[in-house]
Image (tube, rainbow, N blue to C red; front, side, top):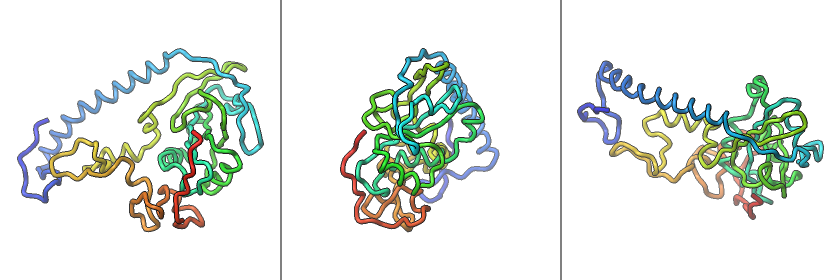
Length: 258
């Protein structure tokens, strides 16, 4: 892409051009964006062709009604998507995972998945007696279950999405995200990528003079006034909307069970 001549604006701001120049550059970028979209469609087609591996559908997970077989999470549907929420044993609500909070908050309502015939549930390694009050505090309405001491692929490492298929009584793992693969459920990140300052994280490729010096995820915790902080008065951002949220003295993280 050919950039226009520099303008005498505040350092680091995008250059100022006329609308026709802007549209020409925008159209040039659109060609690459469309290619990116088509490449994503091709990857999705490859995912649909992956083989699958059978898992034990009788594995007991613990929810509000006690222990139930994992198979029940399908709720009569053929497909199930789960998110595996990290957990810090003994921590107050303020000290639970800010990244998993971000992801699950964006999935406050999975109605469209169910309309398409896909059930959704959140799994976590936390003990149910700790998880239940957290779910109530957050106001989550989608189902949560404890998979404490359960091995992969139902338990194991947290922070990822996994897709399962049911064929009669048999249950199969069909796909699992890794690393930044979970970003697909965080539309805030995609929207920030459309802005001139992006996510404001140091790893980003930024134009000269454009600020992006923060650590990754720097704004996922804020204080009561909305100032980004990972200090002792910070909470995962959505928690400040919850009744009774206040600034505690510590995150209270006593260890992880994931």
